[in-house]
Length: 307
Image (cartoon, rainbow, N blue to C red; front, side):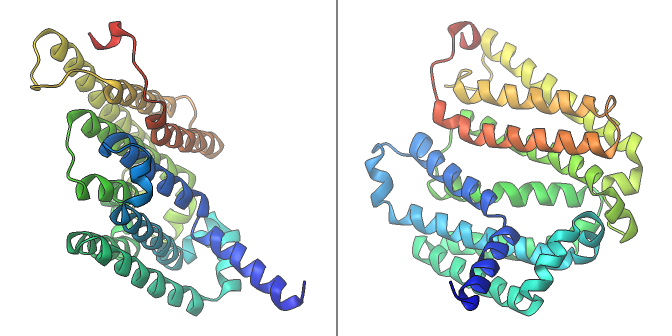
């Protein structure tokens, strides 16, 4: 292999690291699974012939890649403290080339979104602006930062959900519990990156309110959500308040996810150092993957859970 090809291969691998190819792969897989098991009545064959679906997936792929690039561009100072390796990679690839890639990827996203529908193009156009606004301004504001980052992570799945206009309470709880899980992880990430956030003035919850108040607020929030979720389960069994719906597979999985958030938030009182927070962050990453992929093992839940 010539030196030119070696450099190209190296740059490609480093670029895939910048756009977090493993996250992109999970998003794409989750979108196809979500369509197949929740929104399709045609079986697996329909997956190959649904052009609009593929356009949405590619639009998501390119827009999320661009979002990772612009976020890395604005976070370069903070990452010098928290993630020095990513800064070195970014400088090796060149800031100008990365910004060109950012514009190019967003352009591709708009093209694929347009072929899906005008509504889809407007959705991804808004998503691109929101990602830029988050990287430029919102991530320096306490609570708004964490909520915005959570929504950015969830939007690619909402693109599938909203475009096919399919609604039922089970999917609402499945998505809602994922939202809580992502939000919990954002708070844990604030702890792991606290040093860089503090030095460069990123007003995270941890910086603005301190560690003790932030972890107590997270624990009380997740406790309230989990108790409300449990109460709804017992009310729905005895005297249904949601018509034409009873606890199902999606509800069961959502309960497990909210239980994990509840336990992790209180675990912060037992493990309060950065190393422990890194372990909790890794655990939540794994929980997110399981939640997204759990839809593929849609099975009959024992009747004592659902009846």
